[in-house]
Image (cartoon, rainbow, N blue to C red; front, side):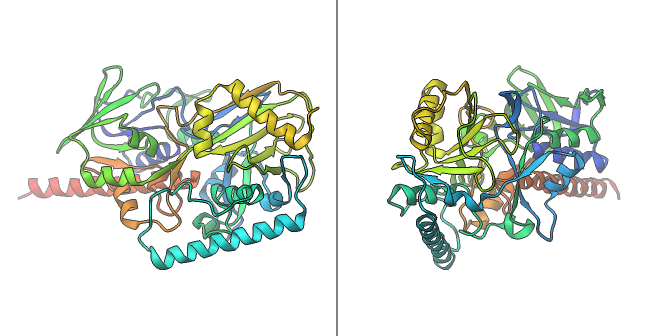
Length: 452
């Protein structure tokens, strides 16, 4: 199907939100859509890469929130796609904390420190709820830690940067359950987005041929007028539509990569600036053989360092891909930004020094390393949005609210599930339904104007 000269709706971005929105529109009879994607692929921040002979996830990696009374919609999509997953048990991670001399902290010491950290986090949340119902967006991603020792800093990192449900009331766990499943499928997490796209776009032999999806189309300007939206590309192409759905990340919105004519109103730009972002970097080193403990309760382990978040949280990939000899260490925010600015060789050197602290000087050298760079990706500029535990409802609504004929979607527009894949998926559905309602109202207004 050829793209119309003027579409009903242009959707900017082909991640889970954009594709979900497009699917709902077409299912409701709005077929003259145009999806513009800046990269050469769909999926957005669900992105796999083949490394060491297996598919590893650079972005979203888990289906979080499984096992409750209400089914997680992304878990249902995974079932439809026969996506291979592995249960992740984080409950024992605090019992696998190494100090810099390679000793594991005794269970009773780690358990006591963990319990105190949970109590402190719970008390802090309770105080915020009582005194700051409006929410404080300043420093949302990295609150000043009260922890002092390397052990306390490691536990503080895992509690706050991994959003453990025992430390704060997280809607995802409350609504859908506390199960977390790692995606370990050669097709990648992004297969869910491909499955959705194949449901409504023209395909042949598994490939999307529908010209309503345009890849490598970089949007640089959106002009919104009273009766239409005009989208100008980096290559000079111009597209017109009645409406636009903008499903780019909050990082892109904050970066001014896309300009707006006229400028967006102050209430919108102020809300965007207030929302913080998280950078989440999963670094994969591969080895000729495994030297780390495996087996029950050993999938995750931590490194206690004087610097918070310094190569703290580790996972082996043996459960996901047996025999792969791959580890993954997760850095966030400040450490992510630092690592993104240095060479992979420097990062590998740092990671090897940490591993030799934990497992001794005679472990083998890594044969390769994979270091994603989400912050420096001009089409992403972050991993996901980060609202504080006690969020400001008005700020959320302002970020979500349309501006003229431009509608906004993405995980950052989900008040309850921001930061999660299911948040992005549900946001795409909600945004398209809101647009369908607006289109219905516009049709009624035109009908009233014409009829005597």
